Amino acid sequence: MRLGKILVSSIAIALLSTALLGAGGKTHWGYTGHEGPENWGTLSADYSMCKDGKSQSPINITSEVTVEAQDLEKIGFDYNTGISSVINNGHTIQVNFDAGSSITVDGIKFPLIQFHFHTPSENQIDGKEFPLEGHFVHATKDGSLAVVGLMFEDGAKNAFLAKVWAKMPKKAGGKESLSISADEVNALLPEDKDYYRFNGSLTTPPCSEGVRWLVLKNYSTISKEQTKEFLDIFHHENNRPIQPINARKVIE
Image 1 (cartoon, rainbow, N blue to C red):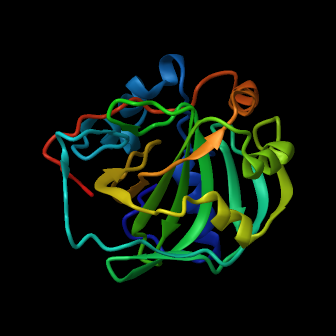
Image 2 (cartoon, helix red, strand yellow):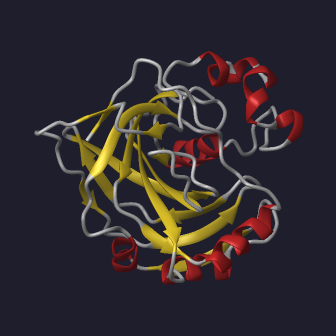
């Protein structure tokens, strides 16, 4: 599925969520064995960007690749709607938001579509791998994408995750109703929303590039028991390995 010029109608939003997470595609992919990340680029011609792309995600954010920008704008968070459902798409757990929430970056309003998880983290900071990373996925009507990354570090049990984990379907394809308010979503985000910004890609096939990545510098927490509970669902880790930075810089 080509994401560059799709229209995000109610039907296209559903298709976009599927493509972002690779579920339901014609060519099956996964995180282990022949279908694992090292082979994604050869599984299908549609996935060629996974091996040929020069701005792939995730990356290791280090001081060697960061550039300080005095005028880096704040992310305009407007999360004012809650979560209505949670699904297991066979690759991750995804929570779906009611329409109306968004962020604003570069003067562009990016509607929030969904939030999903990878363990361990896909992106790294100074070589540090976190037990969990959450991706808030946003898309405009012309198909432009922006992803906010939130790291979870080992620590106290996370009340937000506890609500999601209590309802997350155990089997692929499962979907459950889930009610989490906008206030609870906003409380999950760190008060200090400083971030790293770089150009990247989807971290799952088709690995399409041109994605605005906004990785928050401050973290939430997750208990070791909660991490294990997530892993017990999928029986393996679900993160793509670090990709070459190439000529890119990370703005902070």
